[in-house]
Length: 281
Ligand SMILES: [Zn+2]
Image 1 (cartoon, rainbow, N blue to C red):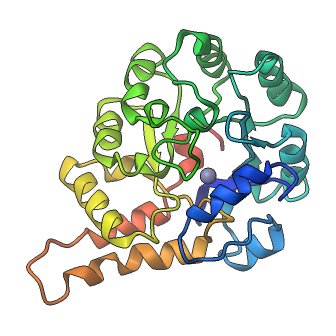
Image 2: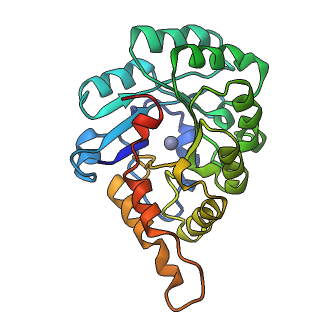
């Protein structure tokens, strides 16, 4: 079975500003991406027993706002396959109420944050209530880390190292850094290595295969393969394309003296039971 820990549910284009949509052209240069989310499309490009963590996202600064109700409805329609996470933008009034509403009333089971898109750092003191709430209710927190195509999203807010003090203060919260913190993979992996409950997902990386080969080699050398979780970032890419991309990475080594990624570890990553690791079974 495959667990995809990073997939989206939103209304496109309704949940985005025109500015966001225009800038999203930089996401995958030269590739036309259909950002409409349709479960049938997702399911058609994944093995039938795939289970998927789904979220929207809230970031006023960048121009994205997905109502948690939409995520809850989308997940409820495919409850055997989808697990929904709520989202908050802690720069906006009312976020603490939305946190509680998404968890208690809508039954969403984790939290998605977009620090750079919204313009906050995850180690700011205004987020203490969020980390306390996540700890009290065993809600995993998945954060976008790494770069973006949005000009107004500050790089300073996205650095993986900001999770180091958070994990030290809230060691029982399951934290997932998205996209291996690209291109700050080194910073991401050393943070993952330090903290038992900090993980990273490999979503949206297979289409930069040379960089992903290096990032996974770094994970191999640090001995942290077991902290990496499978994810896609659908609708930016699919489960099958991500699996294929991972299995092709060692093609770079053919006819060279380059070291190989451990193929057993690649398969273990693809089939890792992330729901058990995150306490969501
Ligand atoms: Zn994403």
